[in-house]
Length: 479
Ligand code: B12
Ligand code: SF4
Image (cartoon, rainbow, N blue to C red; front, side):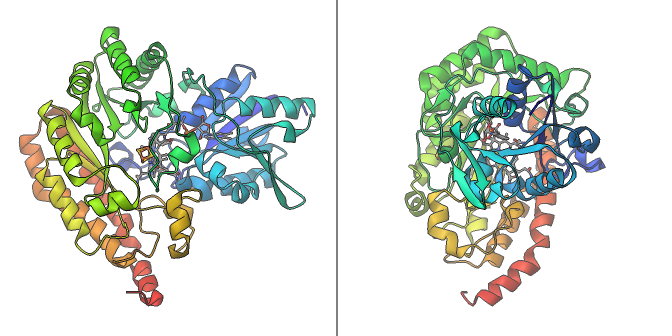
């Protein structure tokens, strides 16, 4: 077949809609678009002229432009899988395009995704996507391509996993994404750069380490700094942004200490002055040299995957950490003048009523600057899925975004969801909002106010599900 026109689509579990809330509530109908899919569009654009991307995080899809494409690529995380399937089905119904799916959820659930598209590409797509396009053009046999799955006579054929790309020095061309420039001024959309892939650890609930592998692959410090500069210019150009923050989105940026220090030093040497935030495990809190360098490079905050507050949970899910480790780490990070944001999981097998209250008290007592509280989620392919697949309430992936989706051991689904609501309300209370307005300054104050409204909308979503969770709790007869 002749391939001229290629389109990339990022589905949103709540597709973009114009709303005043877009100005201050992230994730209602607007959020940061996918940099992974944009990276693939950038790679393909080097070889094909007519390449463009739509993201339902920031715009509506221009259907007229998609339906006459020769190939459409759709990337899905778990929370957007259902919407991704709707889009894929629609394209197959209304056009002749070859539909290809990929991304974390499609890779880990290839047999499910195969039902909705012509091909699924497994793992990272930078190399396989070009190979597939070549084979489609030349009419060669697709099953030569490693890392491909598809249906043949109703049966799933998989050519197995392929080695992930080593060279990931690619700067995503943000102009390839429809309306990105127009929307980049919203405070709910963050400038972001992804600098490394893979993590040497092996936590039971983590899908990432299964998708990206345990070997850490890194971009060069020069390439990262160039991307940071471009990303900042792109977001600030033509816009007045209150939240001038760039997020280094790596899962474990500090896994290679030497490289992490080189990147930070390169940011310092570049003269870029900006606010940065980054995700980390607790160990970074013991590294005074790294913390000093982070501060010097413009980082104000570390988003720490704290996850649990009980040693029993750390042990059960093979997260090498203890409560005391976390406490010491948080205290030392704050001594260096950096804020700590907490990422938490509830719904572990040991969790009981009171887990939300305990979490909120920890956050308030330790002056944690903000939180993301998620109920445990279960992606096929993770150990936690294998051990809990009989305890799932449903497989409506659109709800796998922090809501309760399983029957926990020692607390009912209904009560657990109430615990999340309670923790959020306690942390983001009106009294604490007032305190933030009076005592916090600058970005810190702005972030707290933004999160106050975001958490309000999160709670409304969680509350809307309570009648359903009450019903399934009662019907289960387990509690
Ligand atoms: C940045 C980020 C965000 C941003 C932007 C997300 C986005 N649009 O991409 C924001 C802030 C919006 C966000 C929000 C959330 N996020 Co988030 N986020 C991330 C993070 C940290 C980085 C994403 C990234 O850039 N990855 C790097 C790129 C290179 O990888 P990639 O996107 O997967 O793309 C590569 C491959 O997968 C593949 N690929 C991808 N698509 C396709 C398509 C085709 C056709 C092919 C061939 C290949 C392919 O090739 C790409 C290049 O190699 C990831 C963690 C992670 N490491 O991915 C979590 C992550 C995606 N988030 C997660 C979650 C749970 C959420 C929230 C639900 C959190 C919450 N409770 O609010 C929300 C959901 C928002 C929503 N409703 O849509 C989970 C998803 C788990 C899952 N099973 O899917 C992740 C994996 C984190 C985790 N610890 O598990 N997130
Ligand atoms: S440390 Fe983080 S990224 Fe690494 S395996 Fe554990 S949860 Fe996943």
